[in-house]
Length: 151
Image 1 (tube, helix red, strand yellow):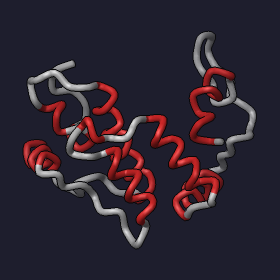
Image 2 (tube, rainbow, N blue to C red):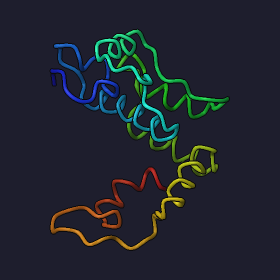
Image 3 (cartoon, helix red, strand yellow):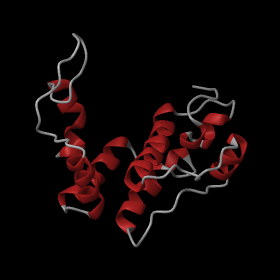
C-alpha cells in the first residue's frame, strides 16, 4: 500500500510517505492512538490543526503521554505506536496483553467499563434490530472478532 490516506492525527508516519508500507502495522499504530483517545478523552497532539505539524511531530517519534504511573498500559501502547513499523506489536500480542490487564481489573478497564455503564451500555444487552448481512454486537461473527479482547 502507498499513499496519503486517513485522519492525519491518527495516521502512522510511514503512511504519509510515497513508499509502500505494511497496512497492518499502520493500522495498529492508528488503533493505539484511537485507544489513547478513548481512554483519556483527548485528541492526539491536542488542538494542533496544522496537518503538516502533526505529521512532523509523529515523524519525530513524539506520542501522547500516558498519564500517571501506568507503565503496563504505556508499554502496550508504546509497542503499538512504535516509530519503527517492524518493531510494532502484532494485533494478537496487543489483544492478549490488553486482555491480561483487563483480567487484573487494571484501572483503564474499570474506567472504560464505567463509561460504558454510565451511557447505559452493556456487553450483555439484547442486540438492536439490524439489516440483513450486518454484524451485530452479539452475532457469532462479532463475538469471534471481539473474543480475544473480551476474554
